[in-house]
Amino acid sequence: MQATQLITIMPGAGEFCRLASSNSCTIRKFTGKYVGMQIGDNVVMHHTTDPKSHDVTQPLTEVLRVSSYAIGTLDNIIEAHGNCHQRYLSDTSELKDYILSFYPLAEGEERNDSQLFVAIYF
Image 1 (cartoon, rainbow, N blue to C red):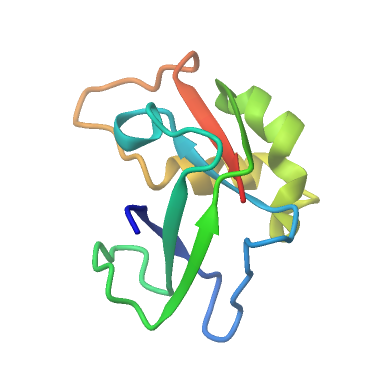
Image 2 (cartoon, rainbow, N blue to C red):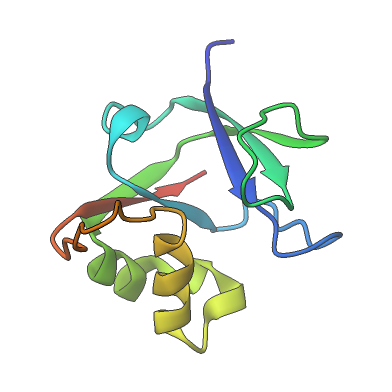
């Protein structure tokens, strides 16, 4: 099976939040491998508690299929799809900060609010 390899960060040890059939999504910057992603594509999602991990040999893995996706600015994605992140239901600014923490800026670089993000559902 050909599949896109993704890593998602679990909130803490033992707090696995499955994505398959849960009406949940993952929100990513719309660049690289996400640009060509299509409905029906296979995804192997590796779950880890280490936010600095790039290792796809994590012990907790889901095999998923993309069922839908939405593309827009981060503010629009959070407004329309942030409720799929149950941990952050009460504070959308916390969710935005959490997502942006995975995309650090280079020294002297400014955040571009028109940058596109994608909410991917499985």
